[in-house]
Length: 450
Image (tube, rainbow, N blue to C red):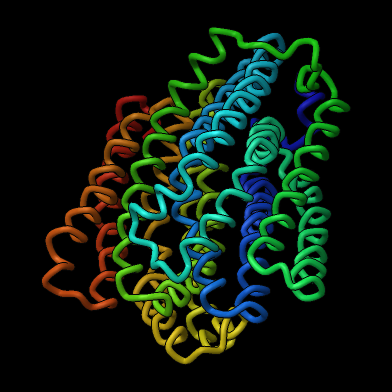
């Protein structure tokens, strides 16, 4: 078992940790950035060639997309944990059963989201008060996006299998290929054929399909026990239960989080299409920085999951320390870089001065302070690696989601200023960070890790 995992990925149970965490996290962050670039390239192309209404239509969908897919992405965290734990226990049969179960979950969730997303696209956009001048374009893009959601689920769950054994590079290679195709198709369909929002939606769908094909090919040619064999794809109750025990709380956390963000998006929409465009442009850079945070959080889940199963508690202490400081420093660097050069980075998406004004406000009040979110994201990842998923989920729901909803419904109506809407983000990060860090410390004390 040890030989297999060393060939396939990173040996997380032996040797140094700092370099291995970096080797794990950087390709994972780059993979997520490339996935986000699908949407960013869409926005840059339509913003420059189809106008600010098309930019608003594409950009304002990010919170809605997150709302619908985040539950199943959370379940993929459970998949990551289950296989990582089996690797630590050297349970080859458990890994085989987990791979088969993960494949089944990805297929079922993808088909389910396909029908839900297409059917509910316009009602959701109407619910969040999407302006009438962009709602038709927003609906079109959202429906095209969800036409490709089965491919996204296959890629995300397939990547979770590889990630559990420390392989974050091959999913990145897949995204390089599909990202290049996405960019070329955007130019052809929008610039050459003047297809606007429909063109970028089709380009994204094709890129996601290529991602799915590539990740399935990799898993079919992986060495045992990680190989995907179509004839074995089925649900295994034990593995599914473990996966859901960790994944459902993570997914529910993300779901409630997304609901809060959709509510905030509704408030953003009330400021008009310029605010929607500016916020959407700035949000791209928040996504890029968040992917750094998520990569180190995932590293905490995977490294902790393997080492706690192997009984290596001293390594668990060092894993948390390294993932936390690496996350804070690297995220802070990019927060400062993007905000410092805000004119250049927002100019990529649109040149309208009013759009820039709203984007600047979001970058200076949200993006610049985003590194604070590392406190609860990495701590949550570490807790999930230790087998505790409901606790960080509950604390994050209260500290982040409930607080934001209260802010939007009770404070913003009497203080209808865009800056005051943005201020809730750093406030919620501080509150949630304090609670989750304290809970991590208490759990570690109980498990004699500290």
